[in-house]
Length: 422
Image 1 (cartoon, rainbow, N blue to C red):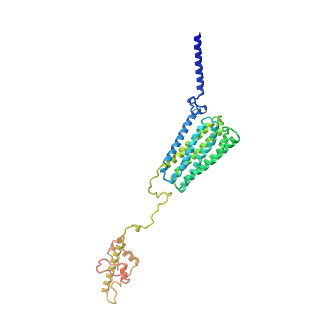
Image 2 (cartoon, helix red, strand yellow):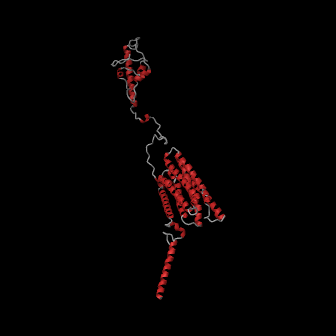
Image 3 (cartoon, rainbow, N blue to C red):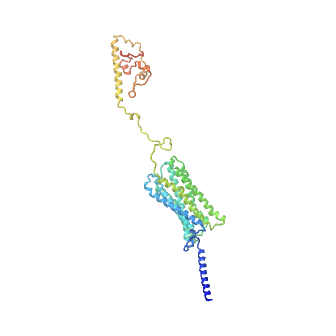
């Protein structure tokens, strides 16, 4: 009997140990370690898959933002165009804001405490204000590029974005001071409407960026209009996401009866969605545009009215033509005509008697000077002017021959066998 009682006691002890171990394991979520605090259970709980999926998507986005920033910094010395270098500062700020959005989403997955709630309320509006102010500065930059072909300085754009973000920093700080420090309320106790109203300045920045980005599509420099299209898509999708999460956060949870339970997941999804929209539609195309090498210079397109016309050299065509033989041919033609005119004058004087006119001078009629020039002028560059075939057999005296003959048209020389006009 003593041995049976001993075995029974040992069995009861083993059952109690197994029962205690099973009760301890039942309190730990499936997929998490035994020593993990309960507040971080949503990061590894296989029964609540939304936390794991959101964590993976946020981690991939953060890694993408870091890689894009490294690529941009490594390629910065090789960016030679001034217009492309001016956007590097804005791109780094956008990547920093997107990285902050992905990191802030983890605070909405874990269970909140006082410090986590302060981080949520302080960083939500500031990170969104940083991203949307960069979009606003980018819209101003693209508007200048599309219309005038020149971009503001990179420091000016960066200071503009940081100055606009500083306003939201002041708003968030005042909200925390008034509610937590002055009234002594816990940081986690706030109404959804108060949280939305504290982000109204961020919504104003987003709407201003959307309105300014539309002006980047109108201009004569078409090179930068593709960047304007990406900016318009980014702002438009951000407005749609902002309207979706505000409507669900204020009215959707109450309508579904999930108001306290689904508040944090809705805000976490909004953070990750906005981060990926900024990466896919703005950061990646802009980084690609910056690191892309400049195209080689090509021939100007004379049919493109947006480009300035090429500057032509103001010079005459005669200066470019080699004409070393021009004076010699002119002098040779002039001397040949003068020699013939002088010989004709001497022959006429010898044949005529004193007091008697030359035989042909009575029947000759002096033609118009323009007719003489048209018939007898020879161009030194092009040679004799082309004319009808019968004109080669007609004697046409030159102007110098007419002058030397006293204004009358001389007769043909004795050796001339062609046809006379008179």
